[in-house]
Amino acid sequence: MKILLAYSSRTGNTKKVAEGVYEVLPDNSYMVPIDEGIDPNKFDLIIVGFWVDKGMADEKAKKYMEQIKGKKVAVIGTLGAYPDSDHAKKTMIRVRELLERENEVVAEFLCQGKVDPKLIERFKDLPPDHPHGMTEERRKRHEEASKHPNEDDIREAQEIFKNLIKSLEKGEEKCN
Ligand SMILES: Cc1cc2nc3c(=O)[nH]c(=O)nc-3n(C[C@H](O)[C@H](O)[C@H](O)COP(=O)(O)O)c2cc1C
Image 1 (cartoon, rainbow, N blue to C red):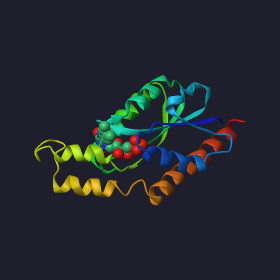
Image 2 (cartoon, rainbow, N blue to C red; image 1 turned 180 degrees about the horizontal axis):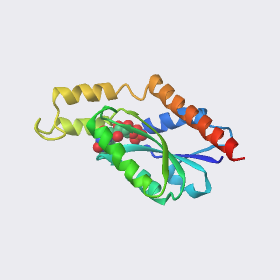
Image 3 (cartoon, protein in one colour; image 1 turned 45 degrees about the vertical axis):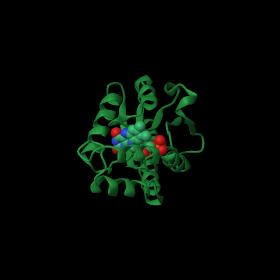
Image 4 (cartoon, rainbow, N blue to C red; image 1 turned 180 degrees about the vertical axis):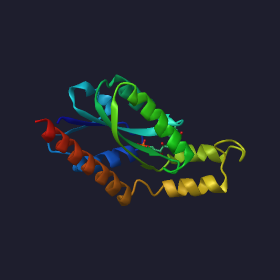
């Protein structure tokens, strides 16, 4: 089984999770920044790493996902919101909808990632009733996000992908 992990990361959070996941992939797997433009369709399993931008996978990751056809795909995402929030759930629904048009989504992992401090500075100038204005709830969320991805996040992602690989390898054995 040929595995590609292609990630998009602006400030390093998604890259950090991708590197953790890569450690538990079989030795002959590839990890590349999405910018390198490797053809995903040469692989059997494609893991796409993205960061959330306006409630969707970032533009580069989205464009990359659109190229994948007839494959098993898994995703790793990081975002500023809590992973169990409605915003996170809706984001994942959008990502799945995009991928499931042409592919089978076999695993997903989402965790918080620290938000670019420059962006937070800009939010501070907005009125509190603005969707991004600074309220106590948002300040707390940013503070929590600033601690992620942490070791527990990486471990959780690794467990998901270890199990995925095991089950895919079992499936391959059955076919042989
Ligand atoms: C321009 C911009 C837009 C963002 N939009 C969202 C968003 O819609 N929802 C969210 O939960 N986080 C949002 N974030 C937070 C990032 O998704 C989060 O910090 C992510 O971990 C960044 O990943 P990276 O370090 O791999 O670039 C945004 C961040 C930036 C800079």
